[in-house]
Figure 1 (cartoon, rainbow, N blue to C red):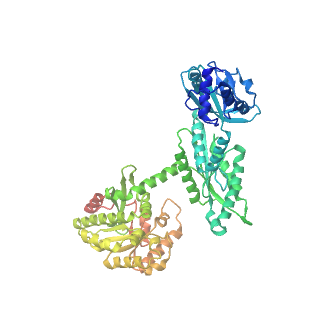
Figure 2: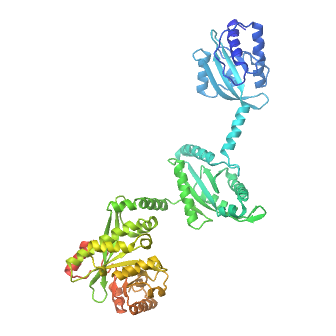
Figure 3: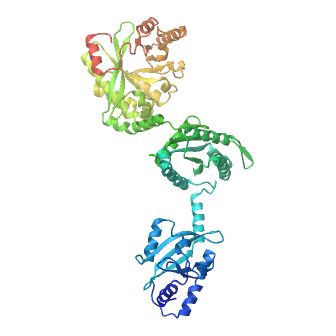
Length: 594
């Protein structure tokens, strides 16, 4: 060994102390006798070797020989890059050459080395340029135990302790990797699929048998899911609670996902033995399959979650395939729901009116106010697109007030313009308006503000809304009736059809549902029972002092037959579609039947 090398490596040994895995510190000159230095070099626990500028080993210590399972003397004159794996990638190889040539001071990397006994060894490889020398110091530290510990810790962190399946974190890691890999495979035509499932009624197991039994059931479910996925190597993960996912990389199409979902359902239908009891469970599964290119993990999971919800809503114990049209409808509903209340403030709603015409004389007796939403994105929307949402969200209360006030103002203008032809305006009222607001106060205030006489206002409530009315709702209806406001039952005959409530509710009009009128069409084979039922209902209503309006009148034949059996008024496209207020004013001025 030359003196320069001895001084350099002596400083390395003195500063490092032979600790495995440590990066050699700054090299300093030491006055160490040559014999002592050689002894320290060969006794060090850290594998080391001196490498010349040509990349060949000049000398190696016993620790390096033991690490590689060979006699250190056999490493002399061998390329250091061969047994350290420094040729594995171009970048590392380039940096290694830079150190050998003195253009770079240090190279540090991790490599998996092959022991001559066949086992693999993870090692930290460090190459340091020796000062005042054309040689470099190679140190190799065995970090296999450290790597194994990290791997075990990662496994614990990334797997569910109850089912031993990959957990949510590992699932999303694999999903992201699969999307990237599959997207570039098959020339960009790779596909990916996901079965997202939830156990039906799992909470009842925890509540009745306890969480230990619930965990046992989850473990058994995980085993069956793994058996279903094993033939094709699909990933099975527990995402939390009783939710599991099966990831299908390189999907061959929807049929593969549907087949997998059906297999899972069949497997889970077999009873489970839990805590001495045989339990039967079912699952709801959302199935999503699509091209990997352009698909994001979050987007895929949102689609799967939505489809799982559909499976639950459709009756559970089934799989449901993602439907873009159904999802678009859901997204539209969500968009409409979130903008309903602000839309009232932005004055995006408008009323149209459909005439109520006397079947005997053809004179317009009244109109029904029908709301339309002039949505800035979706265009003009009919009531069936948003009234249900308004009732669900509670927006029906402010919207209902606006409809009532607008209709009453318009009815007052008609009254002033045509005092000889009193026109009743009929306004629909949702049951939530009766429960969630002071409807009596609202009506009284609006009538006072508009000046509309109470007898020219009719409020329509559905049969199901009126059924069972008691307490406050019944009191409000009675107060409105006492005020002079007419109360009508809309869509009569489609709800509970309990005639008993007609005697105790302050109702003045029945509006027969269009399904009854449908049987009066001349171009179809009429059912005599339809006419018999309608005639009986009309006679009953008249005996109770009620008037009858037939909805959905579409032909002269229907109008004639309905008039013949005693219906008072008709409403439908035969007379007019819903039209703006000025069209009604024109009809009243000309006196022409709509």
